[in-house]
Image (cartoon, rainbow, N blue to C red; front, side, top):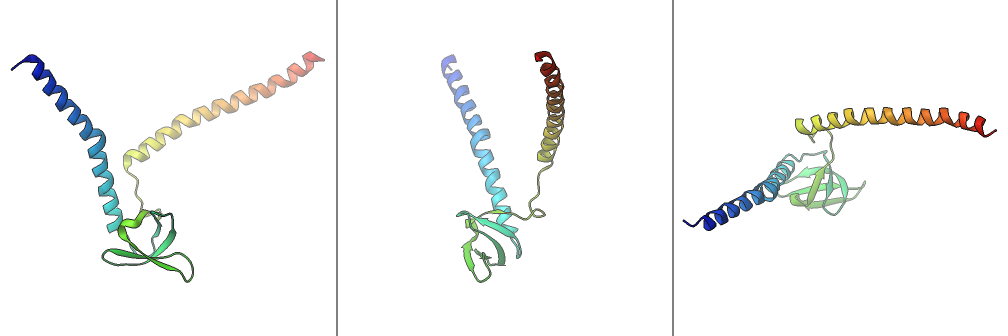
Length: 134
């Protein structure tokens, strides 16, 4: 085999791997999460449709969901038209996301403390400057 052809095949394989890990795999993961969310719909869940309509599920059928949007208004949607479930107990965050959130809080807390100290230092300097200008 020609070395140039080998390097071309290696580059082609690398591009395919990049596409798989950056595009195909995350898309399949989102599809699985959406499918699981729709299969877990139950009466009483607060939902948002893809059109932005907020409501409460009052019945779940095989392919459709009846959503109560007002006292006397009920709308029947296909399950695929539900974009998200707003119930806190039914929405579970992954341990990785919780860990990242805790790390972000730990990083932001010292920054906030530094900002408060800087503001206090500026306030302390203001009276000194006012006395100097007199």
